[in-house]
Length: 116
Length: 116
Image (cartoon, rainbow over all chains, first blue to last red; front, side, top):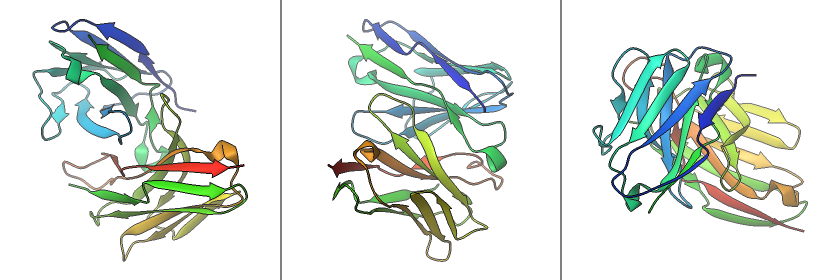
Protein backbone atom coordinates (compact mmCIF):
# COMPACT_ATOMS: atom_id res chain seq x y z
CA UNK A 1 0.00 0.00 0.00
CA UNK A 2 0.89 3.65 -0.26
CA UNK A 3 3.43 4.86 2.29
CA UNK A 4 4.17 8.39 3.42
CA UNK A 5 7.28 8.98 5.48
CA UNK A 6 7.53 12.02 7.75
CA UNK A 7 10.62 13.23 9.61
CA UNK A 8 11.52 14.09 12.25
CA UNK A 9 9.02 12.42 14.57
CA UNK A 10 9.93 14.70 17.44
CA UNK A 11 11.81 17.96 17.61
CA UNK A 12 12.54 20.46 20.35
CA UNK A 13 13.76 23.88 19.35
CA UNK A 14 14.40 27.22 20.96
CA UNK A 15 12.16 30.23 20.42
CA UNK A 16 13.17 32.19 17.36
CA UNK A 17 14.72 29.32 15.48
CA UNK A 18 13.36 27.52 12.43
CA UNK A 19 12.42 23.90 12.04
CA UNK A 20 12.00 21.91 8.83
CA UNK A 21 9.69 18.92 8.57
CA UNK A 22 9.87 16.55 5.60
CA UNK A 23 7.11 14.51 4.06
CA UNK A 24 7.92 11.91 1.42
CA UNK A 25 5.71 9.63 -0.60
CA UNK A 26 7.77 6.44 -0.86
CA UNK A 27 6.01 4.40 -3.49
CA UNK A 28 3.86 6.81 -5.41
CA UNK A 29 3.99 10.26 -6.89
CA UNK A 30 2.03 12.98 -5.15
CA UNK A 31 1.38 16.17 -7.04
CA UNK A 32 -0.56 17.38 -4.03
CA UNK A 33 0.20 16.98 -0.34
CA UNK A 34 -1.63 18.42 2.62
CA UNK A 35 -0.29 19.74 5.90
CA UNK A 36 -2.31 19.58 9.09
CA UNK A 37 -1.79 20.82 12.62
CA UNK A 38 -3.32 19.18 15.65
CA UNK A 39 -3.31 20.75 19.11
CA UNK A 40 -3.82 18.50 22.14
CA UNK A 41 -7.32 17.07 22.39
CA UNK A 42 -8.37 18.81 19.19
CA UNK A 43 -9.06 17.82 15.63
CA UNK A 44 -6.76 17.97 12.63
CA UNK A 45 -6.88 21.39 11.03
CA UNK A 46 -5.75 21.82 7.45
CA UNK A 47 -2.98 24.40 7.21
CA UNK A 48 -2.14 24.34 3.54
CA UNK A 49 -2.21 22.43 0.31
CA UNK A 50 1.21 21.80 -1.17
CA UNK A 51 1.36 21.68 -4.96
CA UNK A 52 4.34 20.31 -6.82
CA UNK A 53 6.06 23.00 -8.85
CA UNK A 54 3.84 25.84 -7.68
CA UNK A 55 3.02 27.89 -4.63
CA UNK A 56 1.20 26.35 -1.72
CA UNK A 57 -2.37 27.32 -0.97
CA UNK A 58 -2.86 28.35 2.64
CA UNK A 59 -6.03 28.14 4.66
CA UNK A 60 -7.50 31.26 6.12
CA UNK A 61 -5.66 32.40 9.20
CA UNK A 62 -2.44 30.51 8.46
CA UNK A 63 0.58 32.79 7.99
CA UNK A 64 2.33 31.83 4.79
CA UNK A 65 5.50 33.67 5.77
CA UNK A 66 5.71 31.75 9.00
CA UNK A 67 4.90 28.31 7.62
CA UNK A 68 6.95 27.93 4.47
CA UNK A 69 6.02 25.06 2.22
CA UNK A 70 8.16 23.75 -0.59
CA UNK A 71 7.06 20.95 -2.92
CA UNK A 72 10.04 20.67 -5.22
CA UNK A 73 9.46 17.13 -6.46
CA UNK A 74 6.63 14.67 -6.91
CA UNK A 75 7.67 12.80 -3.78
CA UNK A 76 8.79 15.46 -1.32
CA UNK A 77 7.12 18.34 0.46
CA UNK A 78 8.69 20.28 3.30
CA UNK A 79 7.15 22.51 5.95
CA UNK A 80 9.43 25.01 7.64
CA UNK A 81 8.22 26.70 10.79
CA UNK A 82 10.14 29.97 10.89
CA UNK A 83 10.88 32.00 13.98
CA UNK A 84 9.12 29.43 16.09
CA UNK A 85 7.34 30.43 19.29
CA UNK A 86 5.92 28.30 22.10
CA UNK A 87 2.42 28.70 20.66
CA UNK A 88 3.63 26.86 17.54
CA UNK A 89 4.14 23.76 19.63
CA UNK A 90 1.83 21.20 18.12
CA UNK A 91 1.54 17.91 16.23
CA UNK A 92 2.10 18.43 12.51
CA UNK A 93 0.94 15.76 10.06
CA UNK A 94 1.19 15.56 6.31
CA UNK A 95 -0.97 13.52 4.00
CA UNK A 96 -0.88 12.60 0.35
CA UNK A 97 -2.81 10.55 -2.11
CA UNK A 98 -1.89 8.71 -5.24
CA UNK A 99 -5.46 9.19 -6.38
CA UNK A 100 -7.77 10.14 -3.58
CA UNK A 101 -10.81 9.53 -5.73
CA UNK A 102 -10.04 5.83 -5.71
CA UNK A 103 -7.49 5.25 -2.98
CA UNK A 104 -8.14 7.75 -0.23
CA UNK A 105 -5.41 9.45 1.74
CA UNK A 106 -2.20 8.28 3.38
CA UNK A 107 -0.88 10.08 6.43
CA UNK A 108 2.64 10.59 7.61
CA UNK A 109 3.51 9.54 11.15
CA UNK A 110 3.45 13.10 12.38
CA UNK A 111 5.97 15.45 13.99
CA UNK A 112 5.69 16.55 17.59
CA UNK A 113 7.15 20.06 17.73
CA UNK A 114 7.99 21.60 21.07
CA UNK A 115 9.26 25.17 21.17
CA UNK A 116 10.97 26.18 24.40
CA UNK B 1 -15.74 25.74 2.46
CA UNK B 2 -16.77 22.46 3.97
CA UNK B 3 -17.84 22.23 7.61
CA UNK B 4 -18.12 18.90 9.38
CA UNK B 5 -19.87 18.57 12.72
CA UNK B 6 -19.37 15.45 14.83
CA UNK B 7 -21.31 14.17 17.85
CA UNK B 8 -20.95 13.14 20.56
CA UNK B 9 -17.61 14.48 21.74
CA UNK B 10 -17.31 11.65 24.27
CA UNK B 11 -18.93 8.24 24.33
CA UNK B 12 -18.67 5.65 27.04
CA UNK B 13 -20.00 2.13 26.55
CA UNK B 14 -19.73 -1.28 28.14
CA UNK B 15 -17.84 -4.01 26.38
CA UNK B 16 -20.12 -5.79 23.94
CA UNK B 17 -22.44 -2.82 23.46
CA UNK B 18 -22.76 -0.87 20.23
CA UNK B 19 -21.39 2.61 19.64
CA UNK B 20 -22.73 5.14 17.17
CA UNK B 21 -21.03 8.37 16.13
CA UNK B 22 -22.75 10.86 13.85
CA UNK B 23 -21.48 13.55 11.50
CA UNK B 24 -23.06 16.17 9.33
CA UNK B 25 -21.45 18.05 6.48
CA UNK B 26 -22.31 21.24 4.67
CA UNK B 27 -20.87 20.99 1.15
CA UNK B 28 -23.14 19.09 -1.19
CA UNK B 29 -20.14 18.52 -3.48
CA UNK B 30 -18.46 16.30 -0.88
CA UNK B 31 -18.43 12.72 -2.08
CA UNK B 32 -15.86 10.87 0.01
CA UNK B 33 -16.39 10.20 3.71
CA UNK B 34 -13.68 8.38 5.66
CA UNK B 35 -13.59 7.49 9.33
CA UNK B 36 -10.33 7.46 11.23
CA UNK B 37 -9.21 6.03 14.54
CA UNK B 38 -6.41 7.90 16.22
CA UNK B 39 -4.44 6.82 19.25
CA UNK B 40 -2.48 9.33 21.27
CA UNK B 41 0.51 10.70 19.38
CA UNK B 42 -0.15 8.54 16.34
CA UNK B 43 -1.30 9.16 12.82
CA UNK B 44 -4.99 8.71 11.96
CA UNK B 45 -5.79 5.20 10.80
CA UNK B 46 -8.50 4.66 8.24
CA UNK B 47 -11.07 2.22 9.58
CA UNK B 48 -13.75 2.52 6.93
CA UNK B 49 -14.84 4.90 4.22
CA UNK B 50 -17.82 5.43 2.00
CA UNK B 51 -18.37 7.21 -1.26
CA UNK B 52 -21.46 9.07 -2.27
CA UNK B 53 -22.65 6.45 -4.71
CA UNK B 54 -23.55 4.03 -1.90
CA UNK B 55 -25.67 4.38 1.21
CA UNK B 56 -24.07 1.80 3.47
CA UNK B 57 -20.86 -0.13 3.85
CA UNK B 58 -19.89 -2.78 6.35
CA UNK B 59 -16.63 -4.37 7.40
CA UNK B 60 -17.00 -6.96 10.16
CA UNK B 61 -17.97 -5.04 13.32
CA UNK B 62 -17.83 -1.64 11.68
CA UNK B 63 -20.40 -0.06 9.40
CA UNK B 64 -20.96 3.37 7.95
CA UNK B 65 -24.21 4.81 6.61
CA UNK B 66 -24.60 7.85 4.42
CA UNK B 67 -27.65 10.00 3.81
CA UNK B 68 -26.77 12.42 1.04
CA UNK B 69 -30.09 14.18 1.12
CA UNK B 70 -29.73 15.04 4.77
CA UNK B 71 -25.95 15.41 4.51
CA UNK B 72 -25.12 13.14 7.37
CA UNK B 73 -23.18 9.96 7.86
CA UNK B 74 -22.70 7.69 10.84
CA UNK B 75 -20.23 5.16 12.17
CA UNK B 76 -21.57 2.05 13.87
CA UNK B 77 -19.35 -0.24 15.92
CA UNK B 78 -20.94 -3.42 17.21
CA UNK B 79 -19.70 -5.77 19.92
CA UNK B 80 -17.27 -3.17 21.19
CA UNK B 81 -14.02 -4.23 22.81
CA UNK B 82 -11.67 -2.33 25.14
CA UNK B 83 -9.15 -2.05 22.31
CA UNK B 84 -11.71 0.01 20.39
CA UNK B 85 -11.08 2.80 22.88
CA UNK B 86 -9.53 5.73 20.99
CA UNK B 87 -10.45 9.01 19.35
CA UNK B 88 -12.54 8.69 16.21
CA UNK B 89 -12.74 11.32 13.49
CA UNK B 90 -15.09 11.62 10.58
CA UNK B 91 -14.03 13.58 7.53
CA UNK B 92 -15.31 14.70 4.16
CA UNK B 93 -13.74 15.66 0.86
CA UNK B 94 -14.69 16.37 -2.70
CA UNK B 95 -13.15 15.54 -6.04
CA UNK B 96 -15.11 18.25 -7.76
CA UNK B 97 -13.07 21.07 -9.22
CA UNK B 98 -12.27 24.33 -7.54
CA UNK B 99 -10.34 25.38 -4.49
CA UNK B 100 -11.74 22.60 -2.33
CA UNK B 101 -10.48 19.82 -4.57
CA UNK B 102 -9.08 16.99 -2.51
CA UNK B 103 -9.19 18.84 0.79
CA UNK B 104 -10.12 16.63 3.71
CA UNK B 105 -12.13 18.38 6.43
CA UNK B 106 -12.31 16.66 9.80
CA UNK B 107 -14.99 16.58 12.42
CA UNK B 108 -14.15 17.54 15.99
CA UNK B 109 -13.56 13.98 17.13
CA UNK B 110 -15.20 11.54 19.55
CA UNK B 111 -13.39 10.02 22.49
CA UNK B 112 -14.70 6.48 22.73
CA UNK B 113 -14.14 4.56 25.95
CA UNK B 114 -15.10 0.91 26.14
CA UNK B 115 -15.26 -0.38 29.70
CA UNK B 116 -14.45 -4.05 30.31
